[in-house]
Length: 182
Image (cartoon, rainbow, N blue to C red; front, side, top):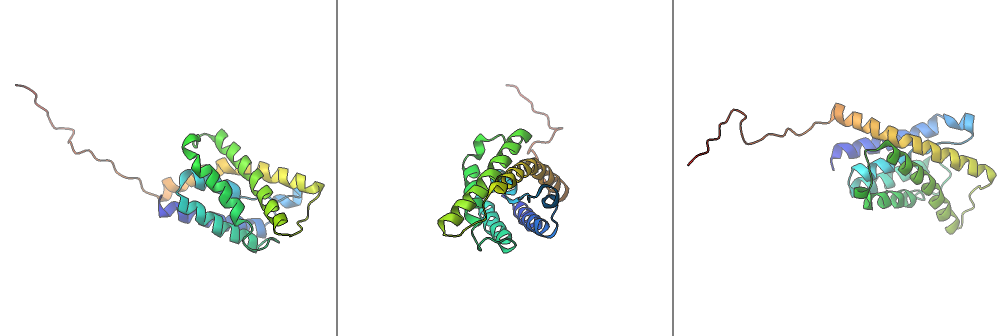
């Protein structure tokens, strides 16, 4: 699509990961951190091209892994898998409906941590898993579901405020008279 959307999405990914790492936010009260990259991937998959989806998966995954205990690059494949799955079926999805955005944000926030844990276990790492992990997964999924419609509103506002719309001009003047006759 446009380079403006891609730049906005990558900037939002950087800011989301930075804010998750710098400001604990929900982790103090709920003992779980909300991951904003899966709902951002939902927006990118529905509103941009495949290049933006791949860039968000690579850059967002590396941003996230650089501030977490994950090995570098392990978050790229789960983010890309979620993004490409939505991208392939985006013409069938009601992307303008907040309910659909909520459900897709929930599904992406459920699938991304599961795929990341599966990748870590496959690679031979020992992630810290326990009963508290279910609570963290629940809070992360619900937070991602709530964040997805907010991202659609936020990016829609940014595009209206900073972007430009094409001017549609017709080749006919409105004061032109068409004579019909023999």
